[in-house]
Image (cartoon, rainbow, N blue to C red; front, top):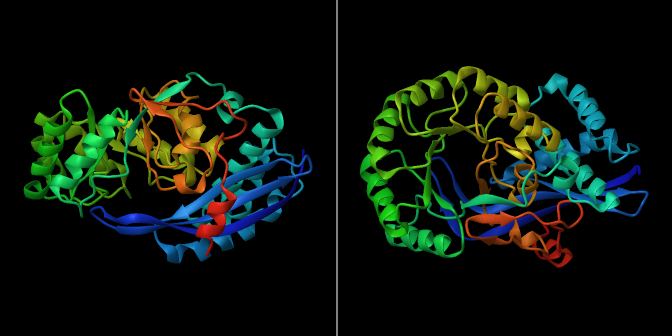
Length: 359
């Protein structure tokens, strides 16, 4: 079935309150929603987003550049679309806003393909499990007090999550009391991931990593700037604490550099920065060949299907940022998220929500 048109809508979803990590403060999730129309009448859905509202015009311009390459293709020709789009953007480099926009269109093609076939995306990919281990990543921010993060951690435990992510400021005096409080609140059997969002130098990250060893953290995420994965590999080699990296890489080529450098105990591809489903799965397969587990970054409604189809998948990152845009909600219990059998992504945009959040 051919693609007959692609429509875009800009929305801004306010968070319940501002959140902060070591490098950013966020109060709104700004998105461009993609509706991909087909001659069968089925409509595929995707989205592209930024934590900075000023980026949205750039993302819309990138979508406008790429949409003509998709019109007239069949929905099962996503690889052809990606190849054509990558060639068209080669002068700009296969990174940045064009790749993010590419992911939204390619993801919508997969959604449409599933809807036409009456199959979920994970079934089209070859699902290996019906539920994926999941951790909560919507809370425990650096601008929240210890009482607040403890309450959030307990709520995540009681809501059925297998773990929680704690954001660090990169200062032992600030970070360690908070880590200790969360560990004491949720017990020894629940996972804690910590993320400093590239906010430290190597020596400081190694020192803090060693201080965190008694708390049995699941991983130390992006401890240092990621422009050169050899720097992360240096930190990883010095620590017993596992190191996670990958969310900031573009396409499987970026993932290849991380794996070649030996920089990851856990690889974290981002669906948007990968450029869509095919590149995410390619990155996951490369990690599997290297014996490295994969944990997704953001986009839980879509990443759930990809994680369900990767034999080396570990934990799905769950954020509730996009949930207000969807009619359906994720089903989480006993540390796992159920993979829906509904066609396509199994999560569809709520028109009332689109109108409410439309910019």
